[in-house]
Length: 455
Image 1 (tube, rainbow, N blue to C red):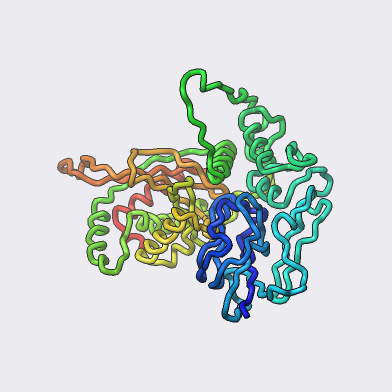
Image 2: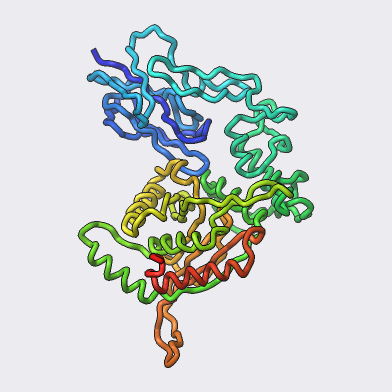
């Protein structure tokens, strides 16, 4: 007899109530192991939920627009072979059941979501049972406040430094939604909100700016227009960028590096590596050089935490480098971990894999967490310089523009050299101008002669 296997939402990071943006199968479809069933979109990435088994979809329990969390039933698959799932299986959470079983059914997103209150965090399912979340009257309420918001909305607010107690809810019975938090941040940014972002109180913040309200314009009266909604990723990253730009005192140090010899070496090396399938990009060399610079100037590999007299620097002993990836859904920053322990070929290979995952919308939250320092490279597009926005809680970011051939005086004559423009934005609360100038000068010297990285 065929078995019916319940396909549950696997661990999707620190997110709950993640919306489904696409259902990729229908009842009767035959699926193979690792075939994608649905696509969900978190604050920063889109992810597919794969099938851990092969079989035929006998029942779908979700639809586009549903919000799901770990352990929610997605579909039932009819399989002809017995299913054995080991305790270490992390591809998906699977619960085997017989179609005629009389046990309590697994609840769907609609059944697990209470009318007013948010569900308590869903415990990890065990191999013998799936525990439905017990609705809590106000499990997410902060002591001493009357803010009604789900755990996911509270987590989102915390990333923006917003006190949910100061946000007005427009949801059912006054519940605070993610849109309410976004509107609050926009209101503060434009001066329309009277309350300040919590972290602004300790960073110079937005208090008392008394900005003019954002202009409201009827653009249609001037000509034809088209309305295009922003993607969820752009909305979220836009709020983060606005917060970072307003709350971090940015200064940008501009410099350039002579990469004539390095570029010749890169081109020659790529010819030797042609059969291996590895292609060294200038970004791979930049990451190695940046790691060396961070070791020499540890304040750039830090984060600022605490308030007032209790502020302190967290100096990191690891080197995880984020790099900006341009995707159809917006800018994303995957993180290359332990760059100090990897060779150029390994860095290039891993960067390529992460960039492809970003373009395919398959980056997980873990792929974008833990960065120490970020690099935004526009070298393949153009431009001479720009001001990259710091990716908080980091304290600096390096922008790279297009290499230009310039005449450079060598002591006897002007000779053509390939010059790479560098734009270093830094947090002036942590780093002063002299330190920034030393950092870019040292980085430029490394790019001129990469042998210095070995020192």
